[in-house]
Length: 151
Image 1 (tube, rainbow, N blue to C red):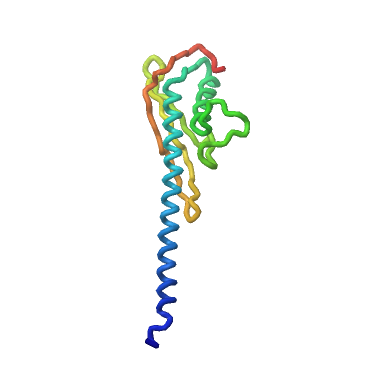
Image 2: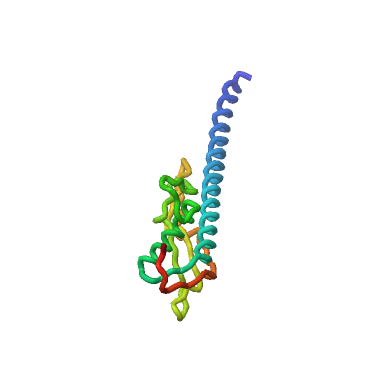
């Protein structure tokens, strides 16, 4: 019995270290998965919005204004967010979103692709960077207005 003294303390220390490691790993995975799911939802909403909105192409500035509206939809859930609007995911900004149209022979868009350029999730114990994903591609079903200006 005398030789077994202190074993309980040692076992507690080892098992506590293992349990804390598992808890930290579970938290890290769960939080990263949660943020990624928020990004998937935001990209999907932005892609649907982009597929249905009017594509105004009177000038390059009009096309860029349309891209900015789509990026705002992804990041803020609104194409024209109010000042001080909070992004759907912390530290997410419109410049991290890519919007590209695939055009047909007539110049009208046939497909629209929306994706994350690069976003880093700080999951406390590690950082995970998503490049090019999540990404969606939808057929363009909106109105093509090559002579209209973006409001």
